[in-house]
Every structure is written in structure tokens, then in C-alpha cells.
Length: 294
Image 1: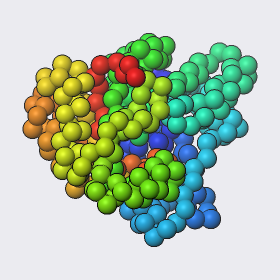
Image 2 (image 1 turned 30 degrees about the vertical axis):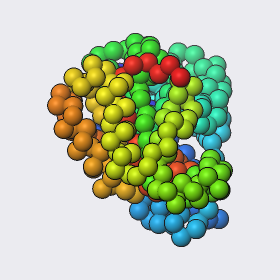
Image 3 (image 1 turned 30 degrees about the horizontal axis):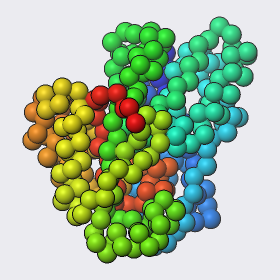
Image 4 (image 1 turned 90 degrees about the vertical axis):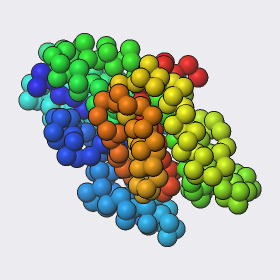
């Protein structure tokens, strides 16, 4: 390939897909109980086991990658004489972009003849994955590293993220939902609907009664914002945290409503970095649409 395309493990794309598309990644880290593990796409701890441990009460934490870790990762490619375009998990969620940018600046002095471009994706999970896939498409169409980076910067706010959760336990535990309101939400079968705003932050948008309605409302947001609305002909990803039946139900609804999709909906797992905060029971929808304005 003309250059290395790379992302963070929190893009939540399957290993076989990354291999097939020649997309590289660097692993974030998370703690499960008192041990630290790499977020290596479920190889060390399968996702089902990870979420089962959370249900049993295991505490989870994540930590950003530091400058030295990014430097070692990038330098492996630069030493081989390869240029690198790396996309980072949203700065609205983690400060890893700051570390990656500092590593870039250090290495530019050491490898002045190489190109190392680092982009804040302002995206997460399957939305981050979708942006990375589209960047790979541009690369494969023959765009240069600069042209691909320019396209990513111009289009990253067109990646929409809409997601709901059927289990508020871990939102309460992490302080994202108050204990009283969380308890009442569980009692009333409330599924909060959230999205990612133009600054890459997770924002609560609606409180929806029942999972069935949450699936329908999530699909309706795609009708409202997707490029060309019901004539949307782009790619669509649904990610989930150990609730494949809910993800499949949403995918079936979308495939019935958007007949011009570019292939079937791609269903992926929400990985350990994002899942450490959401817990099981989250379903997330990603597509290309209007520029995110708020």
C-alpha cells in the first residue's frame, strides 16, 4: 500500500476485517478487577467473558496511551521507510490524541523525510470504525496520504452515532446517571438514547420507554439525518455490547427501510475500551449523514 493506515483498538472492527483491509491498530489498555489487559479485539479476554465479569461485579477502568507508547508504535513503521496516517479515538472521550500528537512532533524531528499524520476522529466505537473504513476506501481508490487525510478531516463530522442502553447499571456505577434517577429508569424500563456531538462528546438526548420503542426511535434518527434520507446508499455499522439479538433487530429494521444500502449492515462488538464504561446492553448505530452541528 502507498502508506500505512492505522487506528486505535476502540474503532471496534474485527481482526479479520482489519487484516483484509490492511488496517493497523494500537491497543488501548483496560483493567478488569485488579489486572490490566490490552484491548486486543477480544483475543486475550473474549467479549462475552469480559461482559460476564462486569455483571458479576468486577470493576473496570481504562487508561490512555502515553507519548512513549505511541512513539514506539509509529516508529516501527517509520523505520521501514513507510508513511503513516493514524486516526485517534475522539478527544471528547479521551486525551489520547494529545499523546499521539506529541509523539508525532517528536518523531518528525527524527524522521524529517517521512510523513506522519495524526487525526482526532471525533468518533468512537463503530463510528470510529466507519470513518476508518471510509479512509481505507479512499486509500484503495488511489488517494495520497495527504488527500486521504484531507478527506477524513472534511468528512469526520458526517459520521453519526446514535445508541441506547437497556441496562443502566454501569451508567449509574460510573456516575453518568444518578442513583435515584437510574433506579427509577430501571424500574420504568427506560432506555436512554445518546449520541456523539460535534465535539466528539457523548450527549444524552432522550429517555425512551421500552427497548422495542428505542430500536424504532434509533432507526428514525437515521431517517432524519442519513445522506439522501431513505435513499441512503452508504455503509452502516451497528455495534453492541453482548446483546446480539437487539443489534440484529435494529439491523433488520434498517435493512427493510433503506433498500439502497451499500451491502448488509455490518454488526460488530463494542470492545473493552468503550464497553468498560457502557457495560452490556448497549446498541449503537453508525451511518454517514448531515454534518453534526450540536
